[in-house]
Length: 219
Image (cartoon, rainbow, N blue to C red; front, side, top):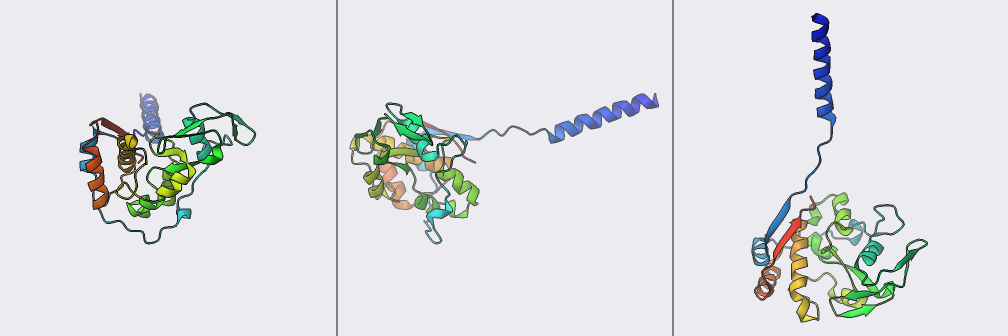
C-alpha cells in the first residue's frame, strides 16, 4: 500500500509539474465599436516630442528570415498585380495603387511604405515610454493591414509626421478610409490623440458610414 501511495504521489507531482511548465496560449484582446464611437473613445493627451529619434524604432527588419524585409513584405501584400520575387527579394512585373493620390506605379522605387501613424507621431502619443522591442514591433507591424501602406513616395514625404488635423490625402473620397485606418492604428497600439487631432477625426467621421471597427490590440 505504501509503495502504491508513493507511486500515485509521484504521478500527481509530475502532472502538476507538467501543468506548471506548459505554456498557456496568449489570446490578444480585441476592440470593436462603430467608427464614431471609436473616435469618441480615443484618449486625449498632450504630445511630447522630447527625445525622439527615428533610430529608436528599428524598422524594415526581416522578421521571418525569408530575405524580404518589412518594406518588401508590404509591397508584395498590397500589389494589385503580384510581382515576381527573385534573388534577394528583387520585385519585378508588379503593379501598385496608391490610394492617397489615386496613382498607379510599376516600379517599387516609386513607392514608400507609410506608417499610417508616423513614428514621430507615435512617439508623441505614447511610444516614448515603450521598450525598444515594442517600438520595433510597431515599426514593422504586419499584424494589421491598416498599419502600413504602400503609397507614392513624394506624397508620403509631404505627409511626413503630420496627423489628420494637419494633413489628409488629396483624394477626398478616401478620407473616411484614411481616418478609419488612422483610428484603428491608434487603438491597436493604445496611443493617444491631441485635441486638434480628435476634433478633425470627429468632424470627418460625422460624414462617414458608421462602420464597426474590429481591432486586435498589439499588446
